[in-house]
Length: 384
Image 1: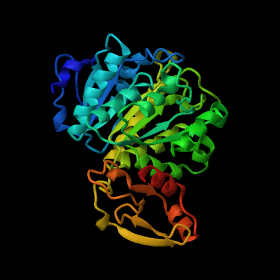
Image 2: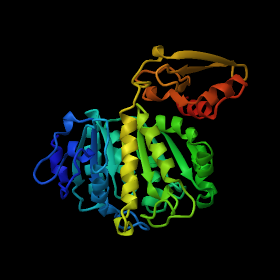
Image 3: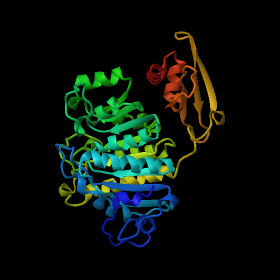
């Protein structure tokens, strides 16, 4: 597929000597990048028509580019920037274009960074994996949970997850929420996540021990960032921000965790409003988030799923309660842990990628004390 038909170039800008931008193959003027020779592909998506409360996010991609391109790195980043997706006549047209682009890039083994645009574009990203018939995990970093148990509500940024969860055929195995604030979330929303055996971490849990997020991010195929997860004193370039939220160093740490994951293949960053970013601090923060994400990408260890279980150290803990042995694996390359969850033998088992779930050493310690990790129970119920 010729991807250039989906894109328009962006205005070029001057670059500092030895900056990251000097090495990026970008669609500026009449040159379309040779993206197949690169590891990472950036695409801008100028779409916010389904955002009722955060209009203006369709215009921020070039601010982010300009700030990111001016950074420096000792690592030789191999990046192609395809420019901005041509906006469709309708939101659905944009969704279709994005899904086709994502499918083509992922099939060619590229790591994809989507610069939104509004967060409902996560659905368009998901549709690209559906076209490959790949069952996936989605992780959202957001101060709210964008799902509703009311099927009659219109689909927009506030409940775009409904479209993913209810989509037929469905290729979503697991969804995880990081950084939500309890006073912004309805009890019915949390109950719905519980019923679906999905995972969630409150902002307080994240800030008390940010390492809790690492296994969750390691299990993701898609990561979706709503910048409203930031506290207003740290980031002021979106509407509807609050006094609480993540600090700048915390979101950068999460991006580093995400980049290191061998499983993650696409990341979307959404809800940046350039009109609110008078001093470019918002664009600078996003640029640094991308920097830490890519730095993580180039620090990958080749663990599972790219490695083999036989490459890892195996630990077995028997549990009388379920008359089953919990099997843990520890990577000698990274010291990271996984937990094996049994599943019924079937031909062409579509959940094969999901029976070995990332966990922590704390989960192993808990199992040694006769406790069964929550991640084991939730995964077991979805597999069986």
